[in-house]
Length: 240
Image (tube, rainbow, N blue to C red; front, side, top):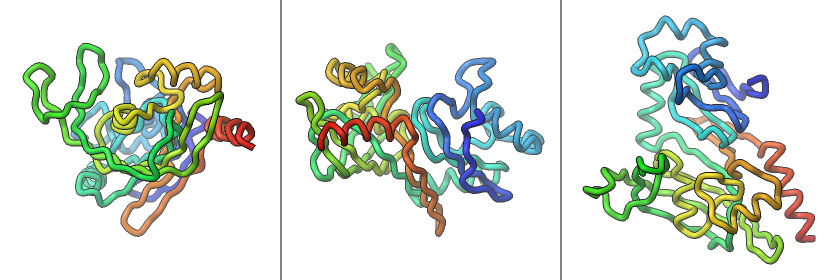
């Protein structure tokens, strides 16, 4: 938890650079390595407010446990409501970088609904908005462009910049795998090839980092974390 870096702070919200391995909010009773606990310890005054969800005070949006990068926490319910509305209306823009298996197009848009697969406790794409057998899917749109391409042990890898237009759980990971480009290091949405390459590159968490947040007239940026930079350095060395 000591690795959490404050990028910006005012009276209403905080922008953090979250390391991989930290949950945004507790998913099980007793979990302490979460941003909820971090915020409660740093700003105990937030506990006097009445939050919509007592288990998620200050949580505007989320990052997966093993996704690193920028995230916003609200210091009061009014600001949380305002920021969530801005996310919903796409007034706040998020940018990620991801390393994927395959030769991606220069740019593309993935527009397909996502639904929770309760049997596997994971998300999946669903061509129809509603399925009697799988439940209700929610519209999801992901746009990306290619930043760099690499060859690694006779395989194509691509570094992409991703601009999610919606905020569904695991959206980037699910959409890119559906398009044929699973994330390097992803333990949940992997393929036989992606597992093999991830093991060879010695990375056991998804190569996904939230690099930029644009809020009104403010732009916040975060460099790739050290473990992800190390992977790129190895690929660049192999492609010299």
